[in-house]
Image (cartoon, rainbow, N blue to C red; front, side, top):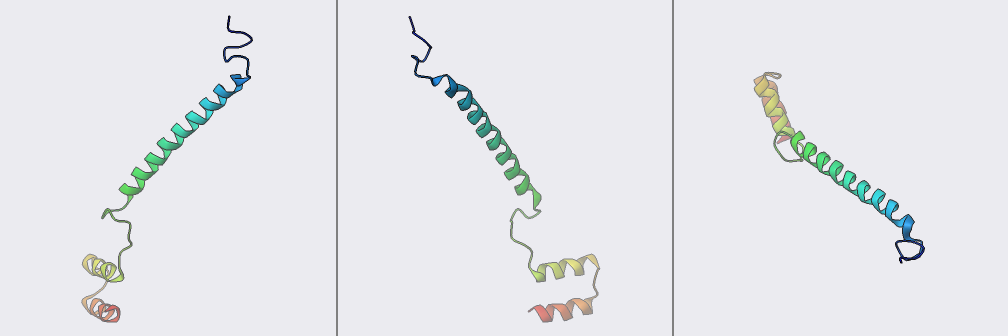
Length: 80
């Protein structure tokens, strides 16, 4: 009743496996892109992707005790 094939004999039998390979490839690519996007957004402490300014780094070093007050004041004067 259907003839030489289910698709009417036009040779479309090769299309379905290629379609499914492309479909699953896109699904996997989308999942990987989502996971990468989420992990990159979690990577930064402040939630923003801009780098810290030199003054912020200097304040952090002084707060940690890596530099003395004199060094802090001198470097702050150079930056400002």
